[in-house]
Amino acid sequence: MDELLNLSEAAGIGSARCSSLDSCDYARYRRLRAVCGLKPAPLKRMMKTLLTTALLGAVLIIPVTLAPVQLQAADQKYHDKGHNDDHEWNSHEDKAYRMYAKENHRKYVPFAKLKDEDQQNYWGWRHDHSDALLKINIK
Image (cartoon, rainbow, N blue to C red; front, side, top):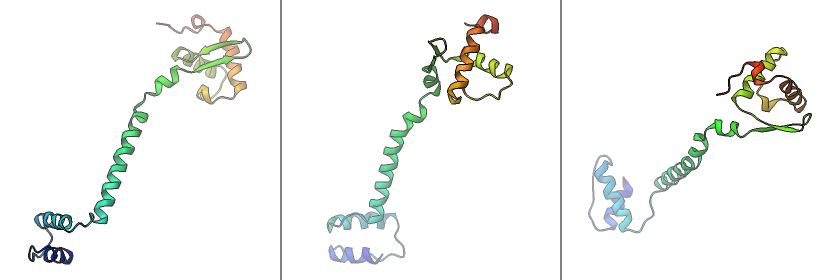
């Protein structure tokens, strides 16, 4: 408040005596600072920088968070070393893997997190169990 009075007197606008700094006084305060060539208040500068940084961060992170996880899972391909062929991981393969885990009394663990040896054991089992044998409907 004292700064407002000092600025108004320095600018030759006269004294502005108020009991509180309301919106009208704040607008006058900003104009006076501009007339006197003073930089914006440090708190205001800091808030502007913070908001700009937060907005830029949100703009950069939103596309990453909204990207569908299913697209990444559909692109998974695994190599079967025992039969020297490649397998694409999809919903049918996931159903077969769940049957394999149940049949072998194993707790379900996402296939990508299995050890290489366990993955190869699954592919060996999978070559002996076709979709028709497992009754997996392919549509």
